[in-house]
Length: 386
Image (cartoon, rainbow, N blue to C red; front, top):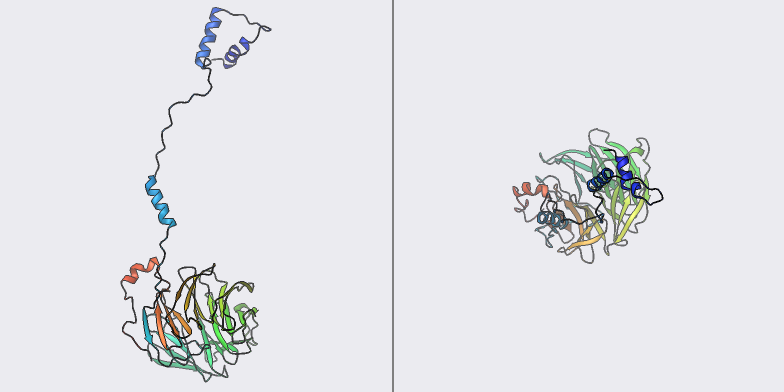
């Protein structure tokens, strides 16, 4: 079919008399056939027909809406308001500057009453800081003293932390010392920056940065890249915002350069720091002395322990710092906290000479099946610690 000619016949061929076109029966019949073929006799351009069929959904609506509700409505975790178990700890030293509590593998749980303790990463060896400036290393499996580190400090050692084979010690003399426990000449690096007792020490998870807090209200960040073997290492950041002793320190498990620090009775604040830049990201007045801090390993939450007036443990949502729960039961300031290896249970020790276990962080979903095979109270056979 000649479409150009057909278009002419249907349009131009019928224009006014000013340009008449000859006509014949055959030509008129051809024009009618074209009109019917191209539907030119219709007066309406658009016509409404039956409603199109409803598309078939891959997932029925009732199931998809139910799935959406399940995703959006995550069940709220139940946080017990009372401790699961309470143990007596007679003669526990009520000293804010010591760190008497630590938790390694479930095979052993130490609570030493007048010394600072810290488990090594292998879960077998333990370091003990003494009042006479010495540090002892013990093999917990053989119950044997391995060696005594001397010559570093001039007074009691109240703060310890491990970085692989390096044991970092902080003393009342303000000194911080890195000790390589593998060699005879164990002092390999020193940090000088505190003018009073070092009461808090924490290595970051990467082992690259060390945070130290002191009774001089100072918080220092030290970096391994600035280490010096023949002179005291210079700090990376010297942070002076706290107005009381800084003992409580906790590195964030989900953001490597985020550090939380807590101030003593004259400060009462929890502060958050970017340790790369030294910037203070937030400060929250808790209303009481901050004794210890622990991050939840499975959720974005922070747990703090306090002194007067409520002697409570407070669970905070990060980063909003909204209070999720307050756990009470201790009758004196909650000086020390330790977290179980699975991150679910927290042990607290207070000046009331008791040790309490709290199921504050709950059980992660991946560990639910494994937890069902083990006892929910690993220390059920104990009721007193000496």
